[in-house]
Image 1: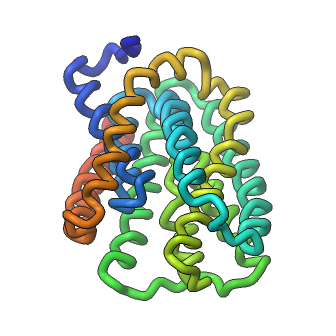
Image 2 (image 1 turned 30 degrees about the vertical axis):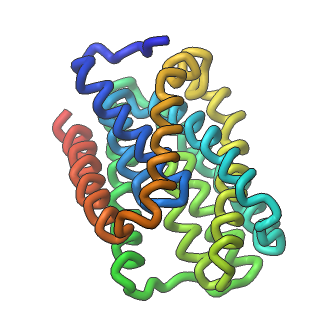
Length: 264
């Protein structure tokens, strides 16, 4: 089933942006190419109105989270997750209030505000990821239940507005010194739960509709291909080199979003 293409973008460019974006999201869900999802989010926001992007991306993320949790079942740290979930619910509530405030703006101002918000968040997270990529230390809160709630709340707020929580929560969890399997399993469960918590708000604010689901159908094989490609690339492509390319692309896409918000 073919999607509804916005009138202000050429069909070939729409399919290019969305196709590459979904491929990147699939790669991320395979556990390869941390940060590739940011490029996907930025490209989706260039291809369609930001509000539509939020709904379509949520569907894709949940569909990717389910198999990720199946493959890592039994490898979650529930001692950490219970506090992260409390923070996630709080953060989604804060992000939802901010979404309602943004949606109260006139249509043109809303599009500009959403593009500026998404672009700025993506650029900020790129800086965070760059520190991690090149082995620089990042200061964060010490491991503690209160810290877990605060960090998870910040991540969930950002996630509600731009689906970009991964690096924030990832930097914090590195302190727990979990095994790689436990680290990935805990992150996967956190992402699934936070994305499910967003669903009622997205339905209420009409970010997630039947039209959203219809426009997502054609992307499902592309997302699956991205996940398969990610598994294949694990031991064949240097992840650091790949990530540098992804971050350069994300920076360019996020900068274009900000420019579109400012210039119109």
